[in-house]
Length: 466
Image (cartoon, rainbow, N blue to C red; front, side, top):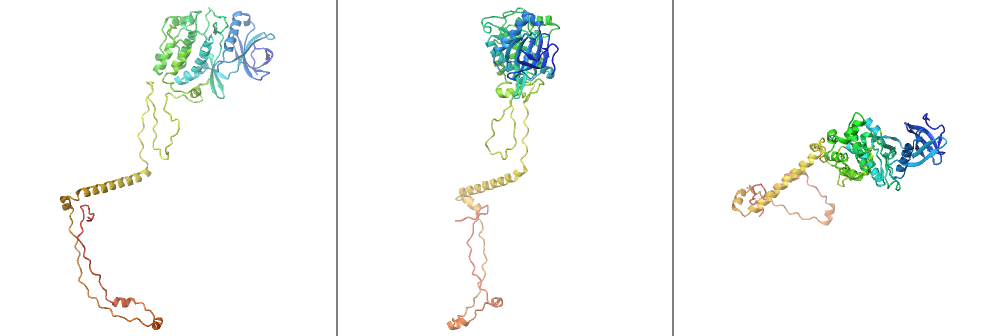
């Protein structure tokens, strides 16, 4: 077990949280992995240093974070479990759910950018969480990739919104208590113009602006404003027009770029009025149309930029169920892909149909021969029935009668009459079979000729029967 030098000297915080290891160390305090000794649940404990806890503004900000996140219940917002102090170690601490993984900022430092579908799959749940927070009067005011945690679970990666330390609690969230600050708080690159001016009247539209900048960076690796220092950056945010997203990412779909561009409009009256409207416009883009939430959850990346399923670059027509037809010989298949909205993407060309298998050729030849014979027979019958009474047709079909040569008759010698023997002699008589020599000596009686009638045949050789 490794512990920070500034961590508690004992292993137990607040009397029931046993420290396992230090997760992070900063100028304000430390974050530990711990275990509740009563429930055995793993938790994360955020503490502030004793010397820092002497400043009332820091304590107020620390408590605000616990109050803002503690009253929100959403699967994409980190769950705050407890707020307390440890007099023994002079620590003020917040207990949160334990998250595994890393933040989106670390992911972008590894992979650079995400594709449109992977980016929307990761950030749309965060926008839904912010919609719930805004409805309860909580404005985050510090949206940035470092505050979007990619929590890895056995079911997949779940994006979580963390760090409500500078969240603004409005009257609806604070039970009639309005907490605001005239000091400049937040991360300069992601600040809206009104937040950069430290305007006390900022509302949920400042989070709309910040989410637009996060989308800029996630899709292109760049932000709409650049400056050598914080002062130059604030000046450009307040006075200059943002660099168009279509310029930084010419490969992005036109409708997607237009929706994000509206989020970073300086005039907050011209921006998306709510985070819900912003999210709905993104879901209506061509690249997200028809995407099921269960499918989108598989495209959320982890801190290494890897997802359970690679998000496709463009939608494709998929068969929802197998065909009920006989698939014993399905033949060549063709994948149909609709034309994409992205000008950089082209519809794939269809390959030519492959030749017929050799096993199918004899069957087709037999069928063709049978068809020819049937057509010839039908044509002959029709022609014959049509021209039977036509003299010209009969003349063409007349055939000379076949001649049969008749042989002269041969005289047949009369056969002698033989009297039958007596019964007594018949038993003793022995039947003699004529021998071949005797048969040869007997005269052969020729068969009388048969006169044949003339036979008429048609032009195709078929006999004509009257």
